[in-house]
Length: 340
Ligand code: NAD
Ligand code: UFG
Image 1 (tube, rainbow, N blue to C red):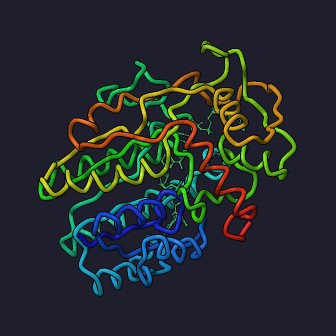
Image 2 (cartoon, rainbow, N blue to C red; image 1 turned 180 degrees about the vertical axis):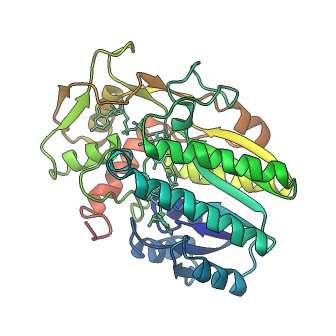
């Protein structure tokens, strides 16, 4: 299949491109580079053993530019990663988040349908479950109250996509609810490239390990979890990327509307992650306990059975590979792709 990959220069998009090519698909990338560097695409091309990845530096809110891309290429499906994703920034700049993520997706969907491409895989998040009513979380678990504008953009876009598919059954819509992506390609050539101070645990750990930051703050050790620190379902980005390739099969069999959790089903605490990182990589990660972070929940992990049964997908990489590959990427690229 020929796939439009929006946001393909970013963290998850770049890893997904590698897996798409490995599975025999082709891709065209549209990205405005607001949170990425085109160097990632050069490296993807190297890893995939192809000459060059067709790339357009286009903002998906720019209808005319997007129309032009669709007039040049025929797409069988779109994997839609493009969006702003920082929880804390979204609290400070809600308008920018709603405008970018909602308007961008609405323009994309309109251009897609005008060109007869009605197959989309959307990057959603476990954040749509809010404080989940049940753990492990199945797709049956009702959506909850999000604690920040970023989360609401995901929840709202899930609704938009659901209603569009309901009104026009020619659409195939796959909502993938990611848990906590970490790790990097084992080559150490592509990985997560956060701008400024990382919000997320793993990039913070790697930046402490390499000496860019003094110590990790562990946000709370009084949660009702085995060691008191927050528990999450960390998933290796290569497994996550492969989940998208499997989701294309759902589209091929005309799934209509489908929702899948992409996680391992295994929860690890903040201290589990820190200890595994130190043990596997033989580097120190100084940390101290800080107050709880506003909006955090105690524990969140998936029941990934549905993706296994219906997509034939299962996460295969464990905590040791996650911490090893995260460190391998950071160590080989202390300044990421060089833009921060
Ligand atoms: P990322 O920031 O690395 O990649 C997103 C890409 O989209 C970037 O390259 C950015 O430049 C591009 N982009 C943003 N707005 C755009 C626009 N208007 N037009 C064109 N390009 C635009 O983020 P990521 O971690 O790879 O996440 C990919 C998707 O997965 C996002 O939608 C994110 O919300 C979602 N997601 C991420 C996580 C996570 O923890 N990384 C968890 C759940 C869901
Ligand atoms: N944490 C720390 N110190 C840090 C950063 C994080 O102790 O410096 C803790 C958090 O308190 C939490 C755990 O590490 O217990 C994970 O925090 P992250 O910020 O890495 O991830 P979250 O689970 O809070 O949220 C992430 C993404 C969201 C996404 C969600 C589910 O940031 O966008 O996973 O996919 F919605």
